[in-house]
Each structure stands twice: as structure tokens, then as C-alpha cells.
Image: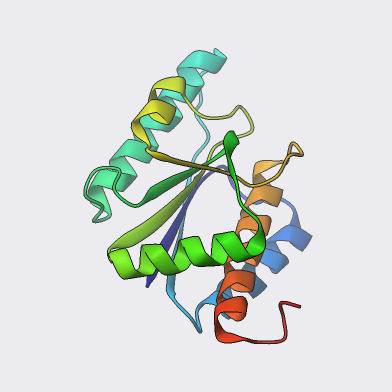
Length: 157
């Protein structure tokens, strides 16, 4: 299975960087994982900034082997909430579908409204508001947990 994580913004917190690195390594035992880090938009106007970031996300999806937005999942506060078992089943279904499963994490300003409409799958990572750095760490932890659950490993209990 190939999983891609597209993230807007750099990891600045060294502790979260280490955590992300740890889970990236762990996931590597189960799947081919690629983390693509895109720059924050530079515009001072929030709407223009989100448009810039959306353009970078679209370009990444087009140049990284995705067929349009097939296999793209947006982490969205209004997306469908899944528990761990449901998320694990979701990953299994996506693996059977084949291709690349791409999770998208927006910037601290969110995601462009037009881009949201283009992405067919929206999942909710948490009811809490998270920084994009925490969202990245939590995404990777949940992916790892889902793989452990699928294989009956004791990590998930």
C-alpha cells in the first residue's frame, strides 16, 4: 500500500518532529509512506493565502501519480468521524482499491473552500482544534495503530 501525506507548513516543534519521525519509521514496516511538506502561502490576505496553498496541493496531486482526486482524503473538522476500528477498515478498503491513498492536512488557516469541494472524501481527525503539526503526528499515529489492529499486534488494545 502506498500512503502519501500532504502537509502545508513546516514542523517547527522538535518534539513533534521526533514523534513524526518515529511513526514514519514504524509505518514503513507496513506500507510505503511519503510525506510531502508544502510551503505556507505567502500572501497576507487569508483568502489569497488559501488559494496559493490549494494550488500547491493540486499540483502535488497531479504530479505525484494520483488520478485527479481519486484516493485523496481531506482532514476536515466537518468530515466523517471514525473510531479506530472503522479507520482501520477504511485503510483496508483503500488498500484493496489500489493506487495511492493521500491524506491532506491544511495550514493553520485551514483549506480553500473550492479545494474542499473537489476532494470527495472528508474525515474528521478530532473534535478538538489541532495545530497542523499535531494533526500530522496524530494522523501518523492513527495510521500506525490501524495497521497494528489489522495484524493483531499488541500496540492497539
